[in-house]
Image (tube, rainbow, N blue to C red; front, side, top):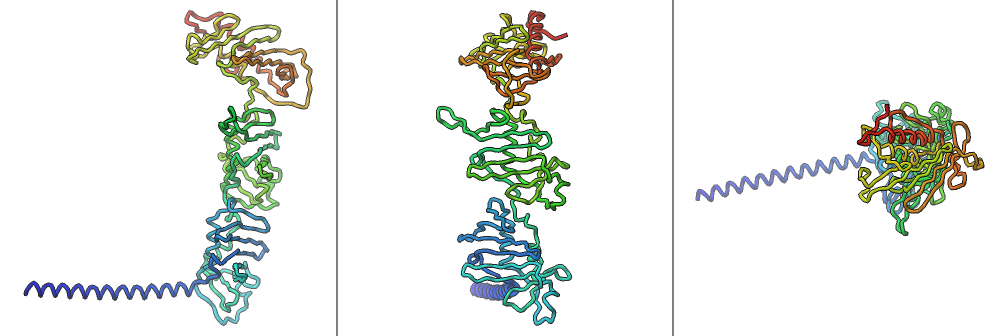
Length: 494
């Protein structure tokens, strides 16, 4: 019996708890309903997204922005002052924020039966007017006025409603933000496959280049896409050029900086220092204009987007590089394994360098040989640098200093002839004809190539440094090393 009484007591307590819990839940539900009703009472709906075709925002100054929705209720484009921006050029998060805030915004209070005029609330004329166009042909119009004295809200009116609304400050904030906030910080978002060619011009010194994207084919199989310069000469682009082009294709603004027309000169944009012209495969052409570097930034604008911006200079590597640092400007293209012999005639002096690379492809292999006029040229300094490769490098590292396709020089009185025989049976003959005391015209296989070479390709003695020699001085030094080497094939210049 005692156990039965205890059980009844426990059941009673449990039932009491359930009643209390039920009362609490009911009270909370009633409070929630009350809060929801209060929120609903203080919320103005101009439209449901699914029913809206576009939202138009017109400023007192006449500026106009339209947000267009497609049938899937997604932003299809934004038009600002007659210029259309597709989603790829937009900061969609900001656009969505504007759209959602306008369609449904909170009010802090409302004023009814006021004797004051609309002008007293900044509503005649309005600071801006929002028109929500629905797919059924109906529309809602919101007029936004001035801020309240406490700047916690703004006066507003919806057509068909006699009340003066005090909208939450968020609505004023969203409708007052500059159009630049609508834009993606990506100035371009391009891939190689979209671009036919890209050209560059630097105003201050006339530097220019043109590069196109080409497919690297081997036996009909596409290996990879690469860049090839078509101007100032036909050569592959260097890695530095590739990095520069890729930075332009994915150029991202550090910040949009509105610059008035009368202030463009202060930012170097009245006559931009850099101009990029990008020809797209779809037939379009877009241009990018950039200023000189100012305090670590470039300022710019594009032909497809007039909004001015600044970019951290580190985001555009190689912009100040010479075209000949960006383009493979070597006259001869070869590695040691590619060459059988090089025949020289410089100032009437003839000499020959013979190359043999061992099957191991190791330079230090005893079967890898460098022979200058029948003598072993694998002579080293104490740091392990080889004099024979110094001479070889003076040939394969010859660089074009500039080009000139406007002249037609005669092939006569050449100062040097370099004949390269390759291991695959090909051959190339270079003849250097004096242009002045400092430059040469370069003829390749009997024809003027358009290349101008600096005198240093033949005559440059770099002292004790084992790099950067001209061909003639590299020959003299290699001969000197062969004549004076130790029994261990070591020679250090006195």
